Length: 158
Image 1 (tube, rainbow, N blue to C red):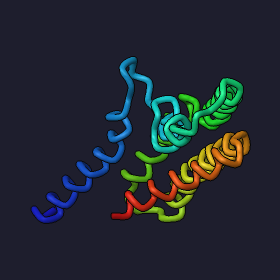
Image 2: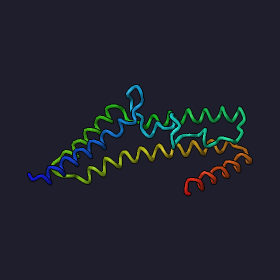
Image 3: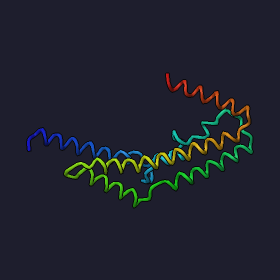
Image 4: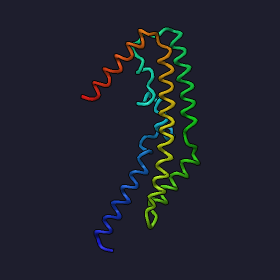
């Protein structure tokens, strides 16, 4: 084996290690991994309903209804999360794919598709929850929400 092949092999090994270890960098204090599905619990980009509806002067009744929707949404998203066995199985499948003599693109696509499908399901659940909260708003609050949403979109695209 020449040095070029050896260097390429080492680089590939380091890159695959980085990919496999990246989720560990997002682990919480007690060692449990927080996936994208659970970002809502931390106020992540998918689930920050509070931020989304800030400044709309919700009534106490609306706040209680929002809390109920958020609680149900958390449960629904959490139900999508993989068990420890599923995560270990996925990790083993990824390792087998990475360390195989030949690369199986179909298997790689299948592994990635399964993960993407879960993300998409979580996204649909979040959008549904946002719609439910929006439907609780008065027409005036809905107009204010739309204006805030447009402002936010314009700021991001600058």
